[in-house]
Length: 485
View 1 (cartoon, rainbow, N blue to C red):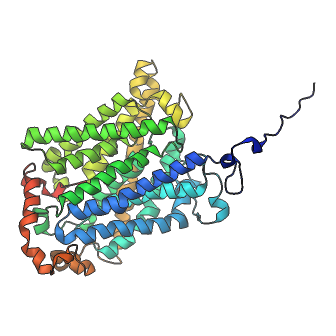
View 2 (view 1 turned 45 degrees about the horizontal axis):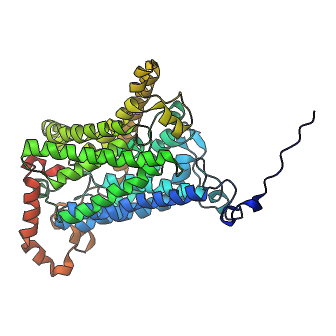
View 3 (view 1 turned 90 degrees about the horizontal axis):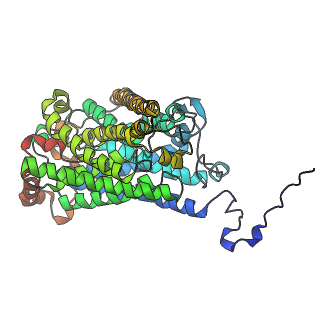
C-alpha cells in the first residue's frame, strides 16, 4: 500500500492577522513575541529608571548624581557590548563547555532567524537577554557607590561583562552549557544574575576600598520617598523578570509571576516583623530590603515551585539574610572590613544562594516538565523523598551546590583580575579630596541644584537629619553601612 503525503495546509483559511508573510514567518507566535518584548521592557525599567532613582534616593545627597549616572552608563555600555560580542559568547556556538564563541548579533539574517528557544526571532531574544546582563552590572554598582572612580567604572563594565558574566550565562542558561546540560535549575537568574552580582560586587568593593570615614559613619538616604518609587519599579518589573523566562505567554509564566509577588510580600512582612521585634519600630528601609531578598530568592524557583513553597521561600528570604546582615555582619571581620555600600552581598549573594538551594529542595517535577520539557531530569529533594526518588532529589541538590561554587569561584577570580587590570590604567578609588566633595568633583553637577546654590544644600540639613532619624529608629549606628539593596 502506497503512502500519500498529507495535503498542504491552506493558510488562506486563517484570519488575516495570522496568515504568514515576510514579516510574520510560520514559526513565530505573535502573542509570545509581544509578551517577550513587554517582559524585556519591564526588566529594562527596573534599571532605567528604577535603580537610577532607587540609588539616587538611597545614598547621601552629595552622591546622588554619581550613583544614578553609574547605572545609566552601565545600561548603555552593556547594550553596545552585548550586540557586538556578549550575546553570542553567552548563547551562541560552543567554544568550551563554559563559554561561547565570539560573534556579533547585528546582521539582519541572524536577527530574523528563530531564537534558540521560544517562538520568536533572535532580535527579541537578544534584547530580552540584554536587560538581564545590564541589571547585573547595575547591581554590582551598588556595592561600590560613594567612592569608585567613574573612569574605572567605565572600564570595569565592559571587561566584567565579557570575562565574567558570559561564563555564568553560557554555563547555566545556554542549551550547550556544562551545568545546563547536566540539569541545574536557575529559572530566571538566581545564580547568573543575583549570586554573580552579590559576589562580584563584594569582591570589587574589597579592591576599590572603603568610602571616606565620614561617609561610613553617616550615610543617610537623601530622599526616602524617591527610593521607594525606585523600589516599586523594581518590584513590579519583576513580573517581566520571572514571567518572561518560559519564553511563552503560557500557564507557567502566570505561575511564575504570582509566585514572585507572593514570595516578595512574605519576605517583606517577615523582615518587617523581625525589625519590630528586635529594634522596636517598623523601618521602611528594612521593608525594602526584605522585598528585594524575597524577589531574589524566588527568582531561581519562580515557575517550578508551588504557591505554598513560594511562601516558605519568602519566610526564609526575609529571615536568613536579615540574620546575616544584622548579626553575622557585626561579628565578621571580613564583612566589617569590606565597605559594601548597598549591602548587595546580603541581599543578592546570600539571598541568591538561598534561593538556589531552596529551588533544589522544592522544585516540582511536573512544573519542571512544563518549563524544561523533561519530566524525570529535574526533581526537587522534597518530592524525591515523597515519591521514593530520593536519589534524584539528592542529585538535584548536588547540582545546585556545584552551581553556587562555580559562580562564586568565577566571580571572585575574574572580578579580582579585572580590578587589578583596571587599576594599572586608572585609580579604582577617587581621591580623598574628591570624595569629600562628591558629585561636584566627579561630574561638575549637583542633584538638587534647582533649589539654589550648592552651599544652600549643605545648610538645609533638616531633611537629611529627618531621613537619618527614620533609618536610625530601627537600625543602630553600626548598621549604617548596610542601608539598602
